[in-house]
Image (cartoon, rainbow, N blue to C red):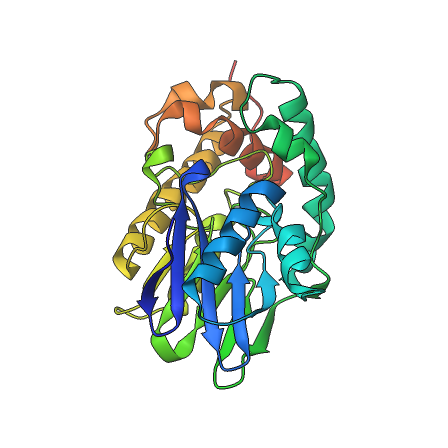
Length: 286
């Protein structure tokens, strides 16, 4: 997929596998690549697209979180451009290898998946430049900000803000892709009770004119993020309410209505109940 310029020297390419976005942010020192696709093989095609764009040399990589579809191309970019700095939140960097090895195990269990060989063959390269809350990266005539707004999709989510053009790259804290019917990624490492508060921080970094690039799918606006924040907030509050009433986790999905399909929320409910304090739970109803 060709890179499309969505703002001055900010290009997004949307790749069919996982409907994942790779973003380039340019400055007079070169290009910053945000997320690197799901395998070494796939990332080599991204490198070709970057070179075809002709906007400059890559001088750094950012991973918005640790999941393989955003990190497994790190090695391909280093092979193409040398020992690039790879930036991520400290938790994401720590979890990149174990998260990637777990995914390789899942592909081992599904030998018929057409992408299995390339995923298993990828050497996992974690970030080596980390931060805890916020950091600014200098691209020469442009600075970009990496901010950890809190936990949500994972424990190591970051957003990248390009202030001079009012663009915010949200990673998988925001989901637009119709490959998932727009349902946020409530996986086995999500933090559903904290996610709404993290999105409040994201919203505080935006304006009514901000272009928000999700990890998957088309760019969206602030209103889209507000609506998704509210839906995730309903998920979080419903978990709290059910636990306070003594409804067991295994019964929660069928107990009430939810803003997303029940089959997409099993991990959210399980993780949410596990993250509640003892005082927030009542004994199960008889």
